[in-house]
Length: 253
Image 1 (tube, rainbow, N blue to C red):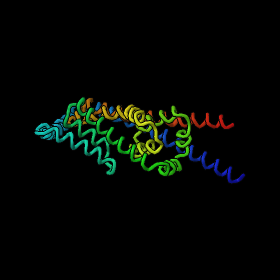
Image 2: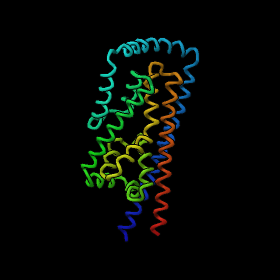
Image 3: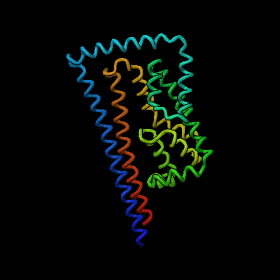
Image 4: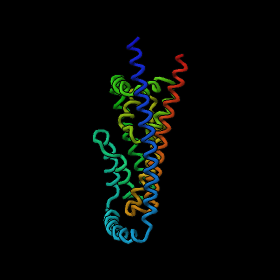
């Protein structure tokens, strides 16, 4: 009886800790998004605008150098190879998306980033499928609340996958391996992954396109959108897990 009570207390503490972290992280991301928007407005003030103009001149030189790259096809191949290498090397996917946006128009950059993201997710999915149940056990031992959801109906697992892709704190590779190890339907997995990650791909591609004017609204607005969406997603996942746990307890009673 004492052991059971101790386990209940431990799970309650973990739940409270998880709830506070997700709520704080979500609110912080939303706040950062609005701070960036305020900073953009501040740069319109004359005394800041003068210094900013000098900075823009330096960025224009870099922009001209990138525009002068003779073979853009090799750049596409290089970007896709970076996505593939991310399966092993911890490269920030946001940086790769921005690089594509720096070289290509937003629509083309987004398309390249989508192809790269699908390649990465496919590699890690089948990697996880090869690892099998051993990987699932190691992962689920660390996240009790996630374990309950993944052991439930498929609708909850679908929503959780979209949430994983929306929230920046969950690694792309780990989540991909987890769903591969569970032998989740591959095409649904790709669709839901893209559904959750597409706002980031489009936003980062736009950021790359306007990176040479970093305090313009065209540059900052996508970042604001990313932070706000990510923050709301963290708060949403926190609420979703709490709701699921309450329903789970009711079913057990």
